[in-house]
Amino acid sequence: MTLYSKIIGTGSYLPPKRVTNQDLTDQLAAKGIETSDEWIVTRSGISARHYAEPEQKSSDLAVHAAKNALEMASLQPNDIDLIIVASSTPDFFGSFPSTACIVQRKLGITNNGAAVDVQAVCSGFVYAVSVADSFIRSGAHKNVLVIGAEVFSRILNFDDRGTCVLFGDGAGAIVLTASETPGILATKLHADGRHADVLSIPGNVDGGAIAGSGFLYMDGPAVFKLAVSVLEKVAHEALDKAGMTPDQLDWLIPHQANIRIMNSTAKKLGMPPEKMVVTVDQHGNTSAASIPLALDIAMRDGRIKPGQNVMMEGVGGGFTWGAVLARM
Ligand code: UT7
Image (tube, rainbow, N blue to C red; front, top):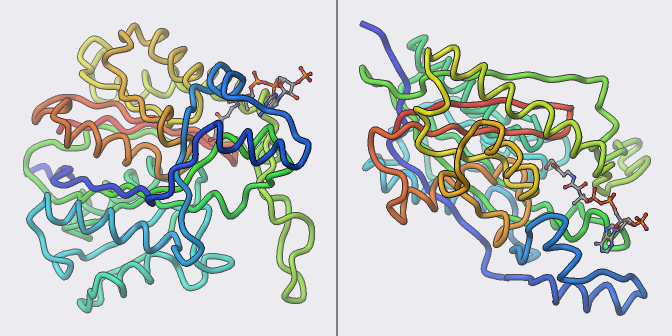
């Protein structure tokens, strides 16, 4: 019997505080920094994003999303035997203890299942799903909670107009379970560390203090070029592994960073815009949370239906990229 992993629940959470482009334009203008709704929308497709309250950590957002996913899956927290959290804004420095362990505690799970964080920046969710899929297919774990959760507002430099307008906070989660029917059809992951410098937080902790910078740095145009060059290819690699072609895809859910990158990817794959799930306009770039957030929204509004084929694609710092092809 072939064992597959199957998505049986999705969930998401956005913190209530919504920040529009005009809000940011006014905030930056007070410091003498010029931006505009027109620039942000034209260059990125973003109109608004959400920011967590000071007391909200990634694990808090993650727990909201996880509870929604568990409810859809009709599972109890203690049914989960592995939690994987993808985040670049973990609750603690160095992800220590892991945000996954904090999520396990906050969900009240006492079954001694495993919990671990995965770090692949904006590709974190597709990396985490790929890891979960391998664990399930090997028989090591049965019910896995995969979460992307971020509070990127904490690492934004509001003196850098080239980055601070792009990112937002949120969380998305899925429950994957062992199944005799597919399921995750294929995954493909890549990294190229030669481009590690184009997107980073160029600092570390030394003697208990930050050495370097604690703010996100991004060479936007360099990341843009890398992103458009890899996303079509990795989608084809995942399709090839599954013995499928792009015309068999019902939905494309790319990482929600920039509508121009997303449109370019859809066009190269020959997919019409209406087959792509877009949330970047309302969420901004929520890094590892962007794909599961978009997936959950399209599941709950009825666009994505059981049996449909969904291509999820991540790309981001590292440089990392990857694809997950799933049958819902
Ligand atoms: O999540 C990981 C993956 N991340 C991404 O995929 C992001 C990839 N990169 C991008 O999405 C785009 O590169 C950006 C949206 C970040 C920038 O768009 P761009 O078309 O590459 O613009 P640019 O950085 O080349 O900047 C063009 C101009 C510059 O002015 P000059 O030098 O032409 O006079 C910037 O200083 O726009 C200026 N600019 C701004 N103007 C108004 C940069 N940020 C702003 C701003 N408001 N917020």
